[in-house]
Length: 101
Length: 205
Image 1 (tube, one colour):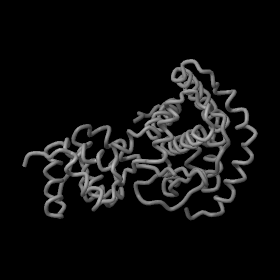
Image 2: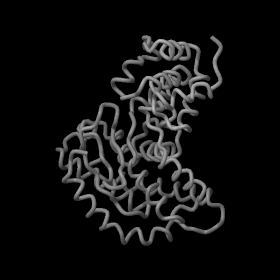
Image 3: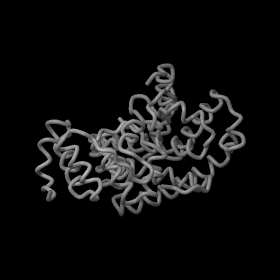
Image 4: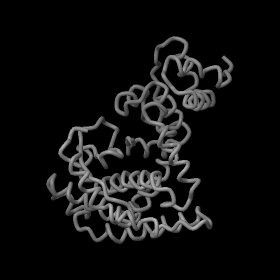
């Protein structure tokens, strides 16, 4: 399937997954420009609702969701970073994340 | 936030630092010149001062840290924050611990201060822990700059921090890369990484 324009994903990202418009536009832009392996995993989940097994650079989709509390979209985008810049992404994941409010 | 005792103490700590904050604008400078380069020079000077100040803390030596109990560790971490606040010219905030999700090493809240994952503090990786306290303290600095215009000379940078503070990109919703790249996190990661590298010689992100 040819990749859609990012704007085509935005309404569902907002309605179904709760992203604000700017956030949905950012996520849609990243997803539609993701590496092939991540794009196909996303497309499968987007169309069927079933998350495929996907491992990149020693991290799996389910591991990112379980250990880092990521939703499926965040986990897919992180796998995309792992595919493009594995060392930088792994160092960052090893450290983890914080919460600011 | 499970440790409510620490929450109450944080207010007292912040009040103690109020006088210090009153002089902060003078230290950083608010001239209308090149704000970005002024800010960079101030940041560089802070990193040098922090490396010297934290390097003198015996508790932060790996062989000493390994032998410290929980209370002694918390005291040392508060000592880091107190020194960093003085160097940065802002009020100090409290440092406490809480049980946080795996993958969350800590956080900063305007109404509380710095919270670290208690599992993180229990580890012997002192370089990582110092990095975390300095990182979260940098968020306290950003927070102070947002609410005290002119405290940081680079107005456009503060504008970006303000916009980001109101619309943060969590790793849980946007992924690790977007989380790392947003202005408040990019600044805090770079700042703490420089000090960590200077103190412990480990690779920074």
